[in-house]
Amino acid sequence: MTGQSALNIFLFAIFPYLAFFVFVFVSIQRYLSRPFTYSSLSSQFLENRRQFWGIIPFHYGIIFLFFGHLAAFVVPSHVLAWNGVAWRLYVLEITALIFGLLTLIGLMQLIFRRLGDHKLLRVTTPADWVLYALLLIQIIAGVYIAVFYRWGSSWFSSVITPYLWSIFKLNPDLSYLSGLPFMVKLHIVNAFLILAVFPFGRLVHLLVVPNPYLWRRTQVVRWYRNPRSALKAFISDNG
Amino acid sequence: MATNKTKTTSLVNLPLFALIIGLNLLPLISPVSAPLDEQQAAEYFQKNCAACHKIGGGRMIGPDLKDVTSRQDREWLIRFMLDPQGVLNSGDPYALKLQKEANGVIMYTIPGMTREIATSLLDYIESRSRGEVSSSVTDTVMAPTIPPDPVAGDKIFSGLTPLTNSAPACITCHSGAGPRIGGSLGPDLSAVFSRLNGREALMAWLSSPPTPTMRSVFSQSSLTTDEARQLVDLFERWSQMKQNYGQSNFMIVMSVLFFGVGGVVISYLFMAGIWSRRFQSARRRLINLVKERG
Image 1 (cartoon, each protein chain N blue to C red):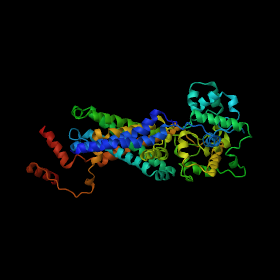
Image 2 (tube, chains in turn blue, yellow):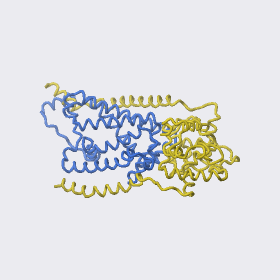
Image 3 (cartoon, each protein chain N blue to C red):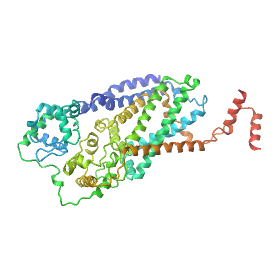
C-alpha cells in the first residue's frame, strides 16, 4: 500500500462513500415512505425554560461552525487571504472557538435536560442518544483542536480541503492526512459517521427547514378562546 | 409503489457505484513494486531523499549516504527505509544513534516505499558512492554574494507576502521567535536553524519538505528558491537573536481559552438581554392561565 494502512484506507477512502451513500439513499427512502417522520419531534411543550438555554446557543453555534467549515471547503484561498493579516486570523479563530464552546455548552444542557426529566426521557429514542453521543464527541474534538492545534481555519484550508475535494472527485488522496494528530482524524471520521446516521434520526429536520418562513407573506393568526378573557387581557394590557 | 421504485433504482446503481469507487481506490491499494532503473532511482532520490541526505560532501539533516552499504547491513537498511519509526521503536541501537546525530529528527516513512524501491535506491547510492562527490541541489542557491533578507522572510513566514505558488504561510501551522502568534499543528521553528543543521540542510529541506503533511501541501505548490532563501535568512536571524518574542505554548493556550470563555459569557448575557421578554404577551398569559387552572 502506498504508505497507508488498511484501516486508514477504510476510514478515509471507503467509509466516506459508504456514509454518503447511506445518507442519500436512506434520506430519500424515508421521505418517500414515511414523510411525516421528517421532523426533530419538538419537546418544547414538555419543558421550555431549560430548553431555551440549550437550544439557542447550540443552534447558533453549530450553524456558524457549519458555514465556517463550508467556507474553508468552498473558498479556501479567500479564507487564507483573510487570515493573512494577523488580527483578522485571531478574530476568526477566537470567534470560532466561542461558537464552538456555545455549541458544546448548549448540547450538554440539552442532554442533561433530557436525562433529568422523566417526561422527556419517555420521548427520547435510542437514535437520539446515539446522535447526542456522536455530536458530543464531534464538538469536544473540535474545541480541543481549536485550542491545542492552532490555527485550524488556515490549515483546514490547506490540508483538509484538498483531501475533501479528492473525495468529491472520486480520487481519494490520503497523503494530506497521514501526519495529522489523532483528534483531527477523529473529528473527520466522526463527521462521516454523523453523515451516515443522519437519515435515521432527528437530524432529518435539516432537510426540511421551513426556509420559506423567511420570505412568505405575513399570516393573520386568530386565537380560538373565550372572548371575555381575551377582552379582559386586552383591557388590563391597555389600561 | 414509490418505495419499490426507489429500491429498484438504487439496487441497479449500486454495482456501478461500487465499481467507480473501486477503480478509483485501486491506485491506493496497489503499490508500485517494480524496481527502478538508474535514471528513475536518481529522480526518486532527488524527490524524496535529497531534502535530508547527500551522497558524498558531508551530512545535512541526515547522514551522508556515501558508502552507506559498507557501514550497515543491506537488509537492515531496507528495513529502516520501509519503516524508520518501527525500527526506532524496537530500540535498535544503530537507529537510536542516527536519531541522536540528527538532533532528534526522525526519518519519515516515504509514502509508497517498497522493498524493490529501497533495493533500487541502495544500488543507486552504491553506484554514486564510487563516483565523484555529489553536488547538492542547494549548491547553486547558496551563492554568498546575495545579501540576507530576513525581513522578507518574516513577511513570508507570517503571510504578509503571499507565496508565489499559493502555498499557505508558515504561521498557519508553526510558531517562531517573532512577535506574531503562530499555529501549533507543526513544531515551533524558533530554533529550527540549529535543529536542522544549518543553512544548506534547511535550504534542501525547504526545497522539498519531507514531513507527511508538508510534503502533500508543498508538492503541489513548492517554494521558489528566493522564498526558501529568505526564510532561511529569517531562521538564521532567529538563531542569533538574544530576545525571543515567542511565547510559551501554555500561555497562548490559556489566552485563547480566556478569550473563548469570555466570549461565551458575553454571548449568554447578550442572549439573556435580547430574549428577556420571551415569555411575555400572549404566551406568558397562556402559561399563567394553565398554572392557575392547575
